[in-house]
Structures are given as C-alpha cells and as structure tokens.
Image 1 (cartoon, each protein chain N blue to C red):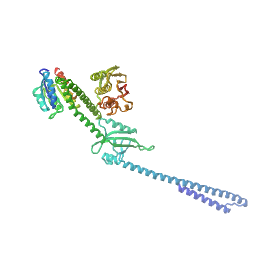
Image 2: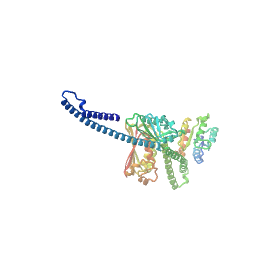
Image 3: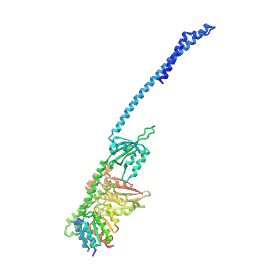
Image 4: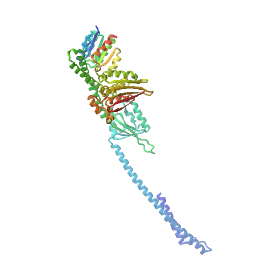
Length: 125
Length: 434
C-alpha cells in the first residue's frame, strides 16, 4: 500500500488510531476525520485512493456522506467502504445502488488486520 | 274448528230430540190400512233410530270433547313453549348485545347484518356505519392481504375461520390487532344464512411484543460497538504489542478474546432472533451449492474442533444444489455444528452428512457428545432452554440457538428432528424440500 492515500471517517477515536497505525505500517498515508461533513470536505479536497465511512456519525451520517461523494464527478469512482455495527438493509442497498466499488462491512465481524487486508485488496485492483 | 264441532254437536242433539219426539208421537209417521202392524214396525224403527242417535251423540260428544281438550292442551303447550322460546330468545339477544366480546352477524358474503354493542365500541362506529357494509373491507394484514381473501372465501363456503390475527380499521383510522373467528350459525331449515364473527382485541399484546423485540434489537445493536472495540483492542495487543507482554498475560488475553467472541456471537443470535420475530427475515432464494456451503462452515469451525481434538468427518451424497436462502442455511449449520462441538468432549467425533434425494435434501449433524436427557428432549427447541447436563459441560451457552434453528428451518419449508442418547451422542437432522 506504499504511497496510497486512505481517508478514514469515523467518530470512534480508538478505532481510527489503531487502524491508522496498521495502515501506516504498510506505507499508506492516512487521513482521519471524525464526522461526515468534515469527511466529505477532506475527500473532495484531497482525493484519496479509498474512503472509509462509518455509518453512524454526528453531523452527517456515512450514508449521506456517501451520497454526496457519489454526486461528485471524481467521487463517483473512488472505492468506498461503509462500516457499521447495525444490520441496515437500507445502508446495504445504498451501498450497492451507489455503484461499485462500495462495500458494506459489519464492524463486529472483522478484526483490524482483516479490514486492512480488505483495503489492500481493493487498492490492488 | 271449535264452531264446527259445536255446531255438529248441536245438530246431532236436535236429531235426537226429533227422533224422540217422533217416537213418542208416532201418529205423524203412520200410514193407514194395517194400522197396528205398521204402528209396531214404525215404533221399532223409531226405537232403533233413537238408540242409534243417543249412542251416536254421546260418542260424538265424547269425541268432540277429547279433540277439544287435546287441542286445548296442545295450544297451552305451544303457548308455554313459545313463551319459553321468547324468553330464551330474549335472553340470548341480551346476551349477544351485552357481551363484552365484539360479535357481528354477517351473511356468508360478508355483509354485516347485526353488530353487537361491543363491536360498535371496538370499531368506534355507529350501527348505520356498519350495517350492510362488507366486514372484509375493514380488515387488513400488512404484506399478507391474500390471507384476508382466504378468510373471505372460507366464510362464503361456510368453512370456519379460527382465531386468525388480523388488523381492523377503526373509525379513528387506527389499525388495531384482533383475533378473527368466523363460524356458520345458520339454523337447519332456515333460508337465511348467517355467520357469527368474533373479534378479540389483542392489540396490547402485539404492541408489547413489538416493543420487546425492538428493544432487544436496539440493545443488541448498541452492544456491538463496545464488543467490536474490545475485539480490536485485544487483537491489537496480541498482534502488535506481544513483545511487551508475558506468556501469562498473552494467555489471559487469548481467553478474553474468545469470551468476547462468544458475546459477539450471542448478540448476533439475539439480533437474528429479533429480526425473525419482527418478520424481517425474508427468505431470499437462490441456487446454492450446499456442499460448498457446508465445507465453508466446517472450515470456520475448524479451529474450535482442533482445540478439543475433535475430528469432523463429512459425507456428501447426490445433487446438492438447491434453491434456498444461503444466509439462513449457513446460520442453521453454524448453530448445529457449534453445538455439537461444544457438547462433545475431547477426542470426540462429529459427522456432517448431506444426502440428496429427488424431493429433498437431508442434513445430519451427529456427535459423540454428552447427549440430551430424555425427560428434557421435549423442551429442547424452546426459547432459552438449556438441558441440565449442558450447563455442566459449559456454563455459557445461550439456549436460543436451537429455537432459532427450528424457526429458520420451518421458515424454509423444512422440518427438524433429533435423536439423542445420554453419554453417547446426539444427531440433529433437518430436511429442506426442493
């Protein structure tokens, strides 16, 4: 993942810290935001190679942020991962509707290393 | 009738008198010449006639009397019965009207003819609002409107509808849950066909159920965040800070990780359960390679089996491609297999067999575990039930798994059974139709 830019948007500070450490170890540049609004701003200004959105966030939810992202010319094609602990069929539908490459992961089922692996796989494509 | 019989009696009496008169004054009948002889014959004839008419009139009077008294008795009885019947009819009418249970009389096609007071209260409508309207226009079922059609059809065909859950549209536009029963009460011989509709208000119970399930769902979701965090913290420490920890500390962390995984599994099960209860688990069928599915579940549980040195053997027979819901079958297999592993001691064996036939596919999960006590086998599929010996083996199991398996198997149109012998093992078998 050398040289890749990853944007992480999640209000869970510990999660962000731990995952960033793992990703940075792999050589990626990691940008972190803690709410949807700042997240979308950062995405549109920095153009990362992949975006991670937590669904449940203050100010703006991850789904809303994803919508905004996909409405943008560049944002339409950037890979995105939606993370949550809630089985939300609406969220899943949203992730599929908004076209690949969007993935929906249930946080509680994944370890951080597994998430990092997934990111790596997506970036390799 | 009475006049006729009285008249007849009178006529006969008059005849008697006439003949008697003739007898005692026979000169009116005599013709001359052989006066004495004729007088004798005449007198004898009159004697005969007199006797016959007296006898006849006595007989006739008796007859008339008995007929009249029978008629009277019959009339009195009929009067008594009809008084009784009116009394019962009146009683039943009051009973019908005063019953706290909503009753409605309808024609077999559903036209309301007679709603009782309780039903008016239930609907929040007046009699005019309901009479002549079709009762089925007030009933609905979310996502199952075809059931209402079926009840309508049953009513028309005079087939009883027994305690079915429906929603009733009240005047306030509110939809209230009720138990619907329809029974044909047409009296034989009557050309007016009636059905009795009973509605029992179960709204409170349904609401309570819904609130409970929603709460369970909410709580479970809330629990996931901290559980996920714990998972990551522990995993992080074990993978990235190992050099800072002693073997002992690592050992404890491993244990913590496992217990945490158990909690995550429990929460997932609770969530699946609450989704089933809320009717939110929709069976989504697709063509599934069951052999591959079984193998993947086995692979997932391989580490657990290895820990207890349990050998998992498999057997796959026949065409195991089936149109079914992957996630649900996976959950069922995961549950049965993890149960087997949990309740089988070290060095035991677990067999997983899939057998296909033309009409269905059979799944067997057999173990050499502790078995289920015979007196507890009846309750094994109940919610929150854990057999007494299960608790000895492992204090922590949740008792929800098998209940959920049964719900899921049945939701997929299949059946699930088991055989078990204490200390020898248990085999769970479920079959899914093609």
